[in-house]
Length: 185
Image (cartoon, rainbow, N blue to C red; front, side, top):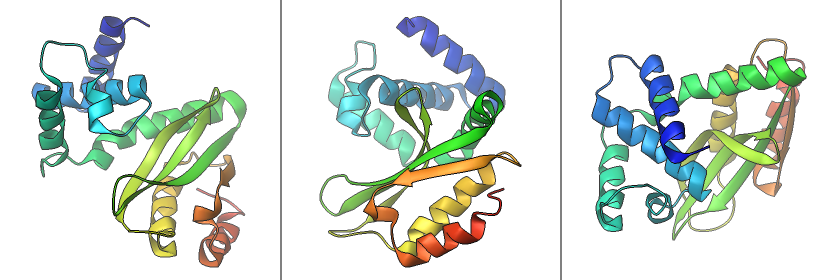
């Protein structure tokens, strides 16, 4: 899909989901999503490298950094309607939800915990959290909290299939998943 068409489609959808939001914040959010989609990365320098325009790379990195650190912008609140729609669409199409959980070291002392929906051989982020952690696995409490939030996004009656690596393999997490096994939503 051409850049302009993709951008304008997402502007319309996001504006419809958040009608009272400032247009500058909506534009920044859409450009951030577009950059993540095109770069397949969470690094701002890689994301901004895919943003069309005449601004210098460092200028765009600072712009996104200010946007993400703005206390008036709650990323989870902004992203929730999109995640709900993707979950509902996958459930409507195939009758089940396929989730991927992963933990990735991002820079020194930071880890990204992410839950994604499997879609056409891609992992599309549904929810994530940052963990200040030097080495090893994140805590089971953080993992359960993230999965509990994702549980609220799953359509009622959906069968859920979850795959992941050893990051989410602690006994506490597995016991919690067992409790939810009878019905995620």
